[in-house]
Length: 355
Ligand code: G4P
Image (tube, rainbow, N blue to C red):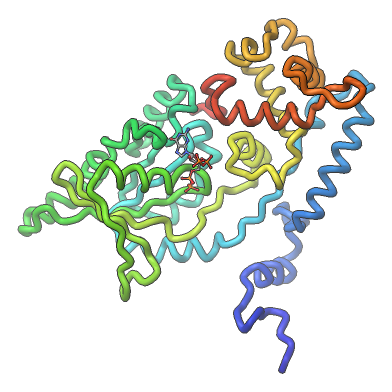
């Protein structure tokens, strides 16, 4: 049998295909895109960075920006997902894009608007319970000015979920009027749910299914492989099409990867947690919250005076996180700090504001 490097059990490997395309077009490094390294290589790189950082510490005047890291997250099935979204658009009347209210820019795929064209769209700003309420209002206003309907959601408690149906009705008002003029009353509104990983798509679907009369269907034939949820809420019938694949964010901007790592959307195993925590501390020094200072019994002037690595060490000591010899366990403190940030224990923080 011919040994075809492109096949595994007779199936074409999308990853290898992508690498080969890079080889044809020029390496991603040269073109400024990511280097698709293996996780083991990334971990080794992080361990090396950690060692270097420890050695550098005695030099007090080091630049804090050295804590930046390039988050490597290979966007596996993006092309396939784009094709699937475009193919499935003809099955729906509108698109509901779920974003994380703490990072309304970084948690969106910037290609989505061009992918969906003129299809009516609703933005669901989820995880509002973790975001700064004032910033969320600013974002809602920003989207409104852009002519985009946006609603505020907290899928954990269900707050705001009730406005989903009316938001969909609003963006489809013209279409509904046409249907009604043709005698099609109470026609189901078909909506595709999209969003990058971890924004809360499954939680939203589970939540709305609980609050409305819902049933799950696999519709064979025309929509083979697609998962539909049929809801009935306030006399409106909605067919939700679950996201047809993984929609990745883009990492052209270093800050996008970093902010998604702060929120936990990029998994910790592809980042250097301690380095990430140092960057978060740099952010918190520049954007202080009372909750942060109070939680670690720190005065604002102390926070201002300390470098990020000194702050992390101070936090470790305050929490009694020590290693043998009484040294602060900064790795444990880093994990704890990120956890507390993700749970909004350092305050409800929105990392991106509208211009
Ligand atoms: P996805 O399908 O888009 O990938 O996201 P998913 O629903 O799996 O949600 C990702 C995480 O975000 C889950 O936490 C989920 O509970 C949480 N989440 C979703 N919506 C909200 C929200 O409005 N507010 C808050 N605070 N959290 C939300 P997890 O820790 O991964 O899982 P779990 O242990 O909470 O289930």
